[in-house]
Each structure stands twice: as C-alpha cells, then as structure tokens.
Image 1 (cartoon, rainbow, N blue to C red):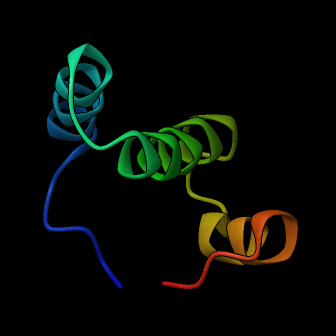
Image 2: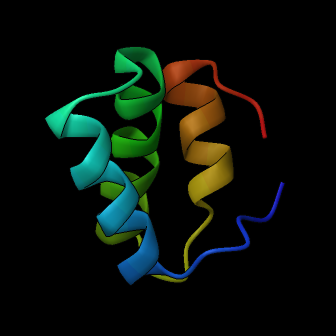
Length: 56
C-alpha cells in the first residue's frame, strides 16, 4: 500500500495520535515513520514485514 501522504503529513498525524487517539494505530504509524527515516529510499515495506510482521 502506498501512503497518500508525504513525510511531513505523516509526522503530523503521528503527533496528533500521540496526544490522544488510537494507540495501536499510533504505534504502527510510528514504526513506519521510523523505518522510513532509517532507510531513505530503501525497502521499508520489506523491513517492516520481516521485523514486525505487518503487511501493506
């Protein structure tokens, strides 16, 4: 799944969820953001699937 948001928008969503919202969604999006930041242009979907068992 391709996210229809850019990195800045993703950060905003994560910040809003941290202040109050769905805890599970916050954790998942935080993992996506951290993995993308650590692997710019890399296979973040593969890394997330292998390390966390999440599928896009």
